[in-house]
Amino acid sequence: MIDDAQQRHDELKISTAAAFVEIAAALVSDFDASDVMAGVAARSVELLNASAAGILLADRSGSLAVAAASNAQIELLELHQIQYQRGPCIDCYTRGETVMHPDLDQTSPWPEFAVASVAAGFPSVHAIPLRVKRTTLGCLNLFMAESVVLTASDIVLAQALADVATIAIVQDRALRDGVVREGSLQNALMSRITIEQAKGMIAERSKVDMDIAFGRLRAYARHTNQRLSAVAGDLAAGTISVAVINRATRPPSPPPRTRRDG
Image (cartoon, rainbow, N blue to C red):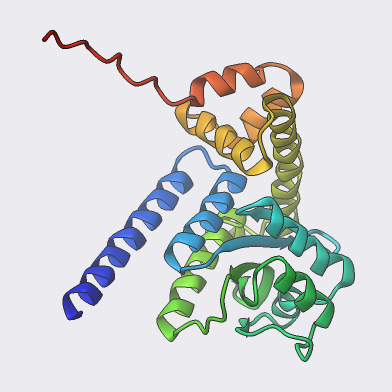
């Protein structure tokens, strides 16, 4: 049992290191905040034993919008919070601090959200702030399929992932130069709209769900070494086709089986 626990611990360390290396590589190359945030959401699910994750960002007026979601179901739950202005993410953004609710029920601070989240299969939720000094830009939301209390080390890791997403939005040099952060946020949110449009095109024409469509879009961007938002824009503009993306991301066919005589 001790050996198994040590093995899991070692595997987590390796996965965590690989995640931050991957994200750091994206940050030093042709910068694409939308792709980095999608990667942060995906890695949060993997490293923190969450079932799903989402990132919300504030626009110029302080209104929150979905910037990344690990699946379409989570996007709907995030939009529910935004619509009713009640939920863990709203509190996290308003207070600028971590909000954890491991067991959602009717006595939760946000009963409407609790009902929707539990019905979707997520009875536990945690919200981690994306912040720079005293300014909160948004939050990273973790959704669990069972009641879970994050450990102190889990919270540290979750905050580190949230911090990476923050770097993807506002770079240190921009802050030192006094560049207004809202422009960067607005660009990230506008990219999100283009990406959603491209996902919809792939899903409709390929008869697949939105999660698979996003996976193909992101895989094509990585395969061709392009920004995710640029590929989405080209697809929306008709510069590239859904068929091209599908061909590039289709797994290779297995080699033909050889007949054996005798």
